[in-house]
Image (cartoon, one colour):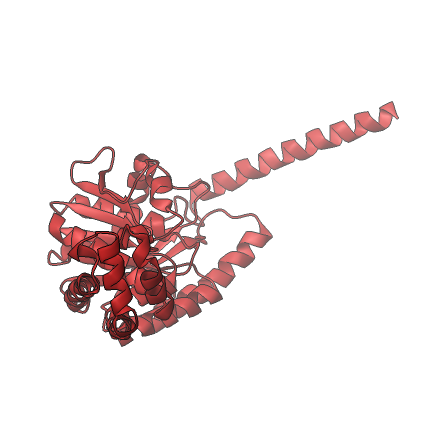
Length: 357
């Protein structure tokens, strides 16, 4: 059956010159950061300038590229047009105001609307990113829930503005007094706060219009061939459809390929289980580009390793040995020989041990 399946790659993303935003998402621990790093490396070879942003508090981008990144875009070592930044989705209060007099107002606001602080910091970041004018921006997003929350931010801010109006009525006098008392001038007045929120709402609405345009935005779902990941991906694809976000690429990571000369019963059982889920992925997403990536012996860290692994994103991975070939038989024979040698030396040790006893 596997021979008939169309082999997908991420070439469609590289060929779509109009793309401005690429989201890479999925459940934790499936290799999103490796995938977003490689997709940005590949994009850097065909586009003028690329920015990869991690909104994951774990900051895995620094680990993937083995280079320290901050909230300021930094050129990735070995590139002239690839930049990376790590953003904490939680905003600190001092990003909004540096004054104690307004702390009560801010905390009241952030407690009243869950996610408004995240929305505001995200809006600030998008504003920043838009002024920088990169050709394409890749988001290495935090686990699934956060990604979709960020798409709901305009309505979150809508609620935020309504809440500010009620807070203004309650705290209005106090805030004006506080700003006068501390001699802070107009920039900390409630009108300035309202203006700031309004400005952010505009930015987010504008960006969300772009997010819903399939010419400008696409979402790459990363998963592994297991039940939970299949289920999570199905949920993610449905949520994205609900938000009208284009998604037609799935990357299945950590695949064990059957054609390798596998001796282990455990691995054979695992391959069989994985194949069952891979078949289901192909059945459910027959109109998607599905890219299968092999499970490796070591982590993909550093630009060289990422570059090397990137070849499997543009052309389907083929195991080095195919079952039934002379090479494969030779490998099996040499494997059996070395196993026999090991067994003989173990036996010798046991005999010597017995003789001593």
